[in-house]
Length: 290
Image 1 (cartoon, rainbow, N blue to C red):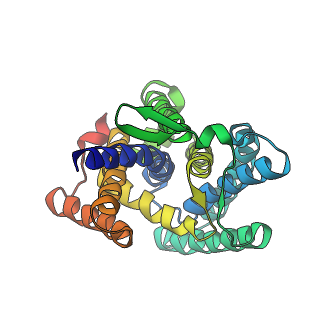
Image 2: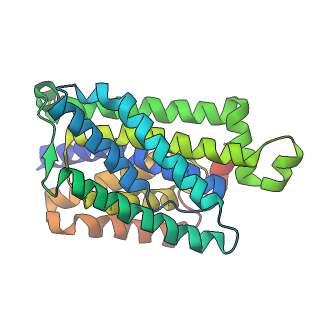
């Protein structure tokens, strides 16, 4: 029984790495513009399907599809920003409606192009087992978990030490004051959307390489990303990583000990529990200063 629980914890941690990449992109946009991009999950899914197309039609390793997926998803993210930026009245509510509509359009486009069949990678190395003592995983899961940690660390350093990263944080804190300091808010907001698209691309390729994809996944990924963002506390990258790991572990333990039918419920219960005990999230206001 103990080995089963340890395996569930390990599997949940690996899944949480992919969740963290999905959530970090959404958190950046939310922190900068105070809006929820409800098309974010569909952009992640689009990257996954581009990796699938590159593997099946061009016989490429999914990793080599990242540049193509990056270009397509970043263009999509930029278009979402340009549309949202035109909203002048009730921006928060109208941006939700707009991005939700864009998400539906992307889902239907994926259905038209790739149909509703479940897809997964056929790459032999990705599917091979990696054995670490009593723990088992696929090579792809361990690889993309390490990539996720590296990307999250890079974004954290970029936000804290680069001029553009500090500009993004300044816009997130006070848009008008940032303008007085010489920061162009529109360029900074666009940069946050492009970075969000880049993270979504890596997350989509990771999800495709280590699991299965189907067109209805986009909405579920957006919900998970939103849950993790709220769990983390606004502006906290360590909180995003911790929240993603907690969500992945909670889902994995639920599937192992109870039933896969309760997997989504476990995430919602964790969400409500953290909000009840820590209304500002795991890191709260402190996360905004770090």
